[in-house]
Image (cartoon, rainbow, N blue to C red; front, side):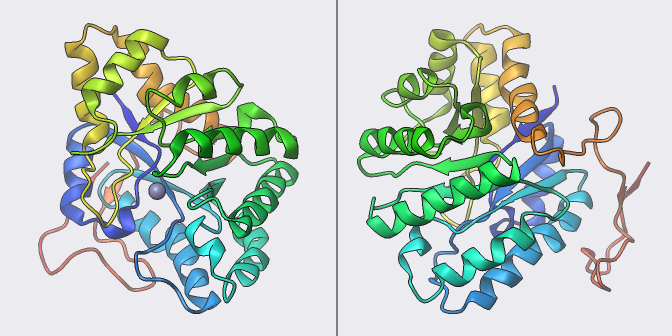
Length: 294
Ligand SMILES: [Zn+2]
């Protein structure tokens, strides 16, 4: 079964992860722009990060047989940094036009401050005017309130709900999202929050309509194989293959396809791997023999 991990921060991961993901059936990914742990002090560092998401990281993924797409946005945490926030907002329209950019994101609430709300609303407006999907992060603390406020803001801005992915849901917030027309994302983590068995139970209870899962793997404790592992948990729970495939392949394609930039190739299969290729004179190789696959 072909799988899509629609929320993973590969910039923080290794080539071993790319190999393991490809071996486990992951064909395509979306990498949302996010914060890097270390707070940024200059707008220019965002610019290089956005360029890297659209350029080097996309190339690196292709060298392991994975199609890489990204979302571009001012993340909720750094919306609170007045040294950079307005400057990043000025950059966004230019980067939201680029190949492989399939949504505005990740945006939303973190601590639910007024600065977060201001930039969240402005970026929803940007998504609406550019006719791009929006990827919305929900806070880890007070998730229910954060989700309710996010859904209210989506309504206020007037962006079409079927263009909106509300992410990091749990048992408490999923029914709130499904009650609207928004898509519901779930991040499957190794030890905290949602795990693969809880996710399988949610699919048994609510079905597969508008349900999306991801690993949200990044620089913290996380697992880039959580999408294939959740497929196994769903199979073990007796969920039929067509429903599983809808959750891990067709749903993310339907949502991000609305950008008009989700190019998956004629057969929806893997990109050609030729590790002899260079990206601005850089190779993924370290002198070892290249993989070349047609
Ligand atoms: Zn993320």
